[in-house]
Image (cartoon, protein in one colour):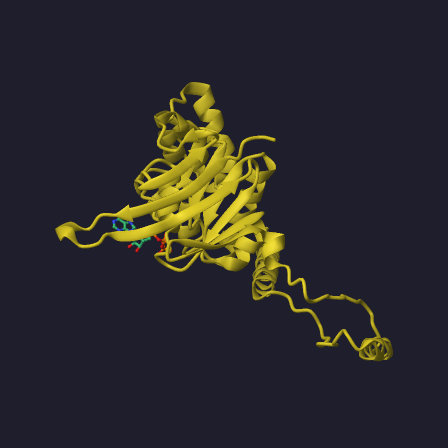
Length: 298
Ligand SMILES: Nc1ncnc2c1ncn2[C@@H]1O[C@H](COP(=O)(O)OP(=O)(O)OP(=O)(O)O)[C@@H](O)[C@H]1O
């Protein structure tokens, strides 16, 4: 079996405090593994240690104790850098550069030149859906567009692991969905993705495994299926069920004596689905109106 992309073993991180006071204990004995090619989500309240773990993985911070390995090598080993892409929580970009210039800039920093640089820039702008905005300055980009440029910069050197600290923070549901689609596309290309987010529904949708942090402790960890399955309950989903059929089913359950009928009803769509469907149909209508106007103006 291939070595895990990330192997964190019994990691502690304490930040020293000035004036001899006790430091901040940000990470307390965390162990977790991320299989290659999977998407791992780290969730937890503010200040639970998510960013600290990410920074240790990319070698920005050293653990106080324990091991942090990426593709079998210590995370502090500088030779790892090429294999890891990172999108920080609050990325800073030069506002006067265009999207294209920004990606080219980071490409150059990673040693790309000439045709390879041009092709990679084009490829990345396409991947993050910013081809049409490539010539616009970042000063005029929305938060969602900036996050997507951040992802492009993190991917420029074709890393095997990408670490995303709150990739959808402050981004609207449509922008979040675009970012989610990019994460799924990266997974499809065999890349390992490590992300943290406060948007639990999204984490549930894209991640294969998840870790829950609380005050530096990993309080739950495992595959999404295992963690979210309610093994005590069964769910039956029917289509076109008449009230007569439901009545008969209910009587069968009541006669069983062991099982309990907890309820039936119509499944609900998520608010996000309703929101996206509404916006999409409005956008479609606007597009049709514009096309009609353009047609009549001819
Ligand atoms: N450089 C630092 N020096 C001192 N304390 C720090 C430092 N970086 C983080 N901390 C502390 O470590 C703890 C964990 O912080 P961290 O940023 O890792 O949490 P987080 O889960 O990413 O939070 P958020 O969801 O708000 O981004 C916090 O108490 C924070 O104040």
